[in-house]
Image (cartoon, rainbow, N blue to C red):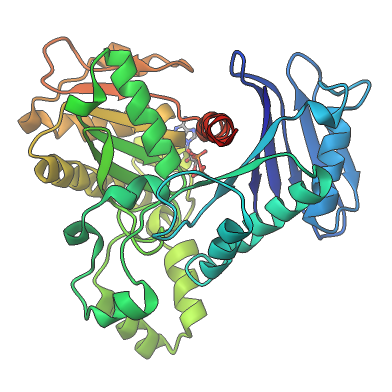
Length: 401
Ligand code: ADP
């Protein structure tokens, strides 16, 4: 069974082709600058050389056609024909309250994703473009949608509601939805497998910290709280996003600086976080370099980032009345030795103790960085959202047969 996983953005489309008999990646790639002058397709077949092609790709249907051409190309391909693709899995950002897990693409599912456009105006429309483009290019091939929000649909009302007039929830569905659900679910499952413990008995805090960052409290295998909210702006300090702040900051600044809604949105999403405080970069590598060199702005950015992260870990230990395992994942979580070290150094009250040597090891596999004495297992687990989507796609297509 071969599954093509597609992650469609407004001007980009990422893909990975899996052979699900052994979950190996046959090829992966990316189409960038869709709809612009010269679109770039980068195709990497496993075991063969990467190829890059510049051409005019005006919309997603052409992008997928080009991808399928590459996948079946005599030289760079990995398939004899497109018919070898058994199913397609799509990443969709917002599934609202309707999607509590991945689902087969049906007219009703597509209508529901469209109804959610106002909650994810930048992300759900390109997902629909990706689905439609796949349908046109691969008629009759079953398609599945996997949502960033779905894993968090298990949060209780007391967790997902904001303490504001309830009519806003009833009229506009204003509530907390969370994000990165596929990643939180994946790494929490891998953590339980790695520790050889039943996930049903575990309290896990998963720290997905990349450009965007969120924490999830996973109790008994389900998400009981997560740090992102109505949108991915809530929660941790991120590369360019502010994370938590007093909502009055927004109205106060709008008033003082005469800012529009889109300007203030852009300020909080694109010009805040590490970038705003360091004044130089949103990339944790640059922040760390500046912190190590004793530069004051980068040092402040690093300290704020670490402080806010550790406060959330404390909050989630409280939310679950304990924690057995903390997982670090995504760009910063998987790679930043110093972020992990500095966060864990302040978690001694939980009984966290990491081994500095284990923390320094770089590897693409799940690994433990805590000492045998640590009361909490601390793991680094590379996330793999595409594989999770491919697994869901396989399961749902088989169930539908
Ligand atoms: P996204 O949220 O866009 O999916 P990633 O999970 O790939 O992003 O994370 C990207 C971030 O990971 C970058 O902004 C960079 O700061 C961080 N990162 C990557 N490698 C390192 C490293 N060696 N040390 C610190 N941070 C790193």
